[in-house]
Image (cartoon, rainbow, N blue to C red; front, side):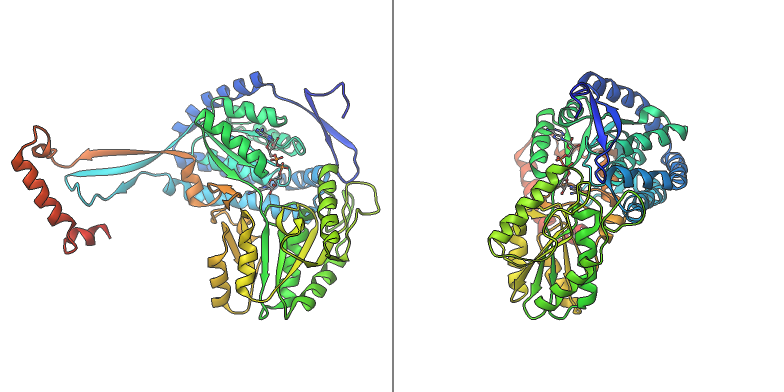
Length: 504
Ligand code: NAD
């Protein structure tokens, strides 16, 4: 980093070449406060629009993003080293899908919802979903288009403004998106970017936002959640993962091996939903490992020119983390079946790596790797697989491979994670209908799906009378009133009461 530029400017680099590809101005705490204040003013107008009108405008923006797909893909290939096909399918397409989905669903989901009342028949109630104001989004570098903008559009559909603090390691794509937004004719103040490092994220939490959606590492998540607690700002925590792929002896091994190689090495293993460990039944352990190695061996590393399957790591410290985890595994007896070292080429590349003979106490089996490394562990049955899968403190995604739907379902139900896929990979994050998020140290709250749209809103209840209030139960209290209340309780809450049916 050029010292003259620090700390007011971020230097952006291409991980495949190490070349500087741009500079981005860091927003000061004052800038962040002013940005949020402008967003709030713009939100008042936006929030008053009919939901259907907001949907129409955002859908038109989705069309512009579709037209700009090549520019977005090139940006991701350069800034993150993503293969173009992967950038299209795992960043651009899911974002467009989310826009289409909410554009179709939001008018119904955000409309007033009547609440039938079992006890207070003389009243009627409804719930209304009202925009909160400004939603702050703090995002990581690994999906720098999809993650922050899916959250921002969810906020915008529900009538809020959004201010994004992108990762300091991948800010340029956010700047491109901001330009496309501004060119679309939508109010520029409704969607804004404040670039910078952790301090800028902290400034955003303190700047008067009404909710924070944070995606990032567990330790950063603790700091962000603490600051949100201090500011009494609600937050969603989308944190790390350690997804197990449990492969039963009755699985289609070719499908499982291909899926695992895809999901373990896509984005160079730098995804919260990557397969981070394979738990293979002992009777198919060797054959599955061989097949995974065969698929992994065919993957081509490269970028940003031409076509490649596995790109670079985002920056050198990430490479060093992967090296340390692999070294620990090898020292404790893991066998390197493929890779196991930095690639012999310019840029921050680590070779696709398959480790067998891994055991649960190895760091590579317990900690998030976030690199192109697949540790394969041997298990004797489903119980052992579940025990090992569930004993790590992370619980984001899980994968199960079996030809028996009942067996796969039983394993899926017992995995302590937020989402499980049977005989497939990755499609949960890409499906806009599916709520996504973690349990345990992987966080709380959900993004995507109907609930996430409504969760961007304040839920307001309005109760109105059908008949006059029952003033007879109001003070002054009396012995007679107390007797009546006692009898009423016995009647209403007895097992035979028709109310039980009404409430059911
Ligand atoms: P990170 O935690 O280092 O940074 C995430 C964001 O937080 C960045 O924008 C960063 O500038 C900001 N930040 C850092 N310190 C901060 C502070 N004190 N206050 C406020 N903001 C601060 O994460 P990363 O390295 O960019 O991303 C990788 C991590 O993200 C992995 O652990 C991965 O599993 C996780 N992730 C989770 C999901 C999910 O949906 N659960 C998705 C993608 C990535």
